[in-house]
Image 1 (cartoon, rainbow, N blue to C red):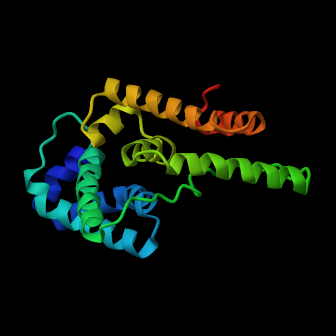
Image 2 (tube, rainbow, N blue to C red):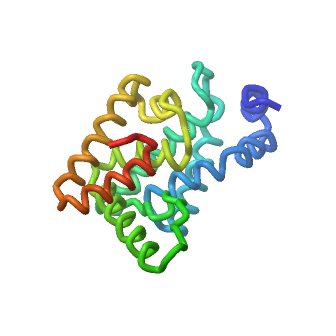
Length: 197
């Protein structure tokens, strides 16, 4: 059954909403977890997101954007409230974003690659929250620019522009290093984004 049929049924049938929950819970949980980096809080917030969605499903209108974008918007709002309540700055656990396999040729090479990757992750952590969120949606959730735009309340063109500026910021931060560090950072940045620097 496609989303539109389930949504129509979910407005009066909790079992249909349960099917929507099963379809999207892993994606929403992953998004929340990467934003806050804590399993217990991520589970709690994910439950609250779906509870809120269930409360408001009757008001949901299909405006041509995916149902998942509506869920992500609920998640963004609850995360913003959570951060206000916690009175702390976002620090996103990005270690799990990178699922690259390190070369096992030599322990020295493996250690160096780990060090280089960590330098890139540290640079990503220094980005503004919105840019970190963009990278999570793009590389963890593997969403298109149009889907990210719907979630972040921006046009597809604005997302492309923000993505480009984010990559330039990372590159500029990496260029503040020594020549050897710059070369290593460009290597990891290229692997992370698929863009040559």
